Length: 118
Image 1: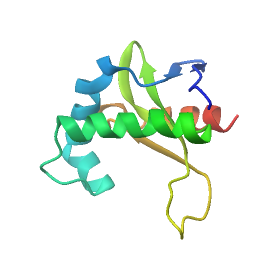
Image 2: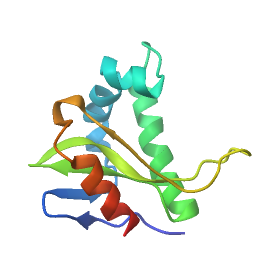
Image 3: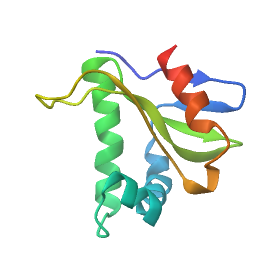
């Protein structure tokens, strides 16, 4: 079993999800643009956000990869990392991200994605 490490870039901290991220994760995934991109239902709720965070922590424990919570300027701005779900047709390990639209256009996904691959 592998614990999720904390990584630092010039502007970002990539760290394991914490229970204190729940409200921010719900706000991120309840945003209409994010919901549409991820094909999440309008009924996305607190329990769904909790399961998403638990999924990433669990993937770290079981597979040694997953998503990190991304923090910029002290604020939770999204999540990024390596994903390999258990689908028979999944092609392999992917770099994925979900960044709050308020933070789009600043290179956060690129910076965090590169660091996650390193």
